[in-house]
Length: 112
Image (cartoon, rainbow, N blue to C red; front, side, top):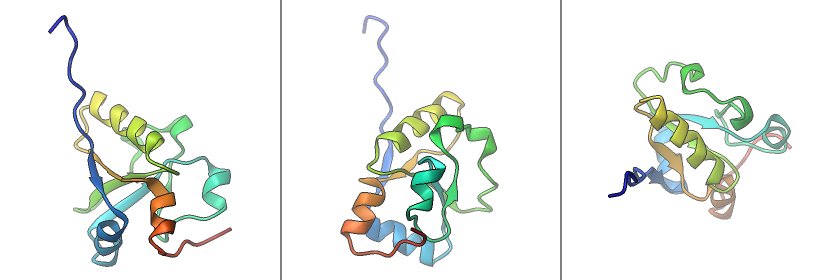
């Protein structure tokens, strides 16, 4: 109505679901935090693609895995998902609560 389009919902996975996906080799994790944040600690296997230069075109071939975006708390990964939607990318999933939720679940990080 009035030319406003309802924003499509982002698919969210929780820390336990993401961990299971990673352990099974079913997810390609993209961390959209800036390089300095990534260096302070990240989820093992994550690829760093900072939001400041993020482009869906530059995401590596997931080789059949689900691409999951992640940031500190969920806001920036949501913004990256909005970019994916505008680019008509099939990428629609992010980690609910970001790495903060991952850490709160007691799961390990590397680096830092």
